[in-house]
Amino acid sequence: MPLPCPSEDNAFLASHIAVLRRSFRHFTGQDLVPARMTDPEAARHLFRAPLALLSHDTAPDPVFTYANQTAMALFGLSWEEITALPSRLSAEAGNREAREALLAKVEAQGYVDSYSGVRINREGRRFRIQDAVVWNLLDELGAPAGQAAVFEHWQWL
Image 1 (cartoon, rainbow, N blue to C red):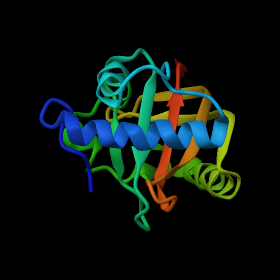
Image 2 (image 1 turned 45 degrees about the vertical axis):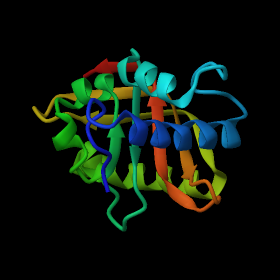
Image 3 (image 1 turned 180 degrees about the horizontal axis):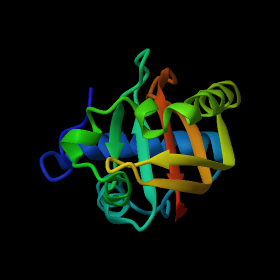
């Protein structure tokens, strides 16, 4: 189930950011934001950050559950649109097999760094993601809670 729009329920959003932060630290040994930040501070910071951050759920056809402002701008989608989008549709049909292979590798290994791949936005404009980190999400009990990706570099094609 998608999160409410960040401006609507910051406490709920902060709990999702806590999952992203904790899982990122678990798999990579690094922090998404400075460790001193509270989850509500991190939620505000990451939502406005000049990097793309997205997550999807564990459904058989995963749907995006979160995207920050940079990710929404790249994909040309509003919060309501992106959190209703099956994440497979972020890649063109010809690139979906490679995307699925990446996600299977992440599922098996916990995370992958230095990922590069082509994505497509609402207008059909393609862009290459560069040096992305993709990782599994774990809930507070350690159960699978989806996957997430963060990247600072992209190039319009």
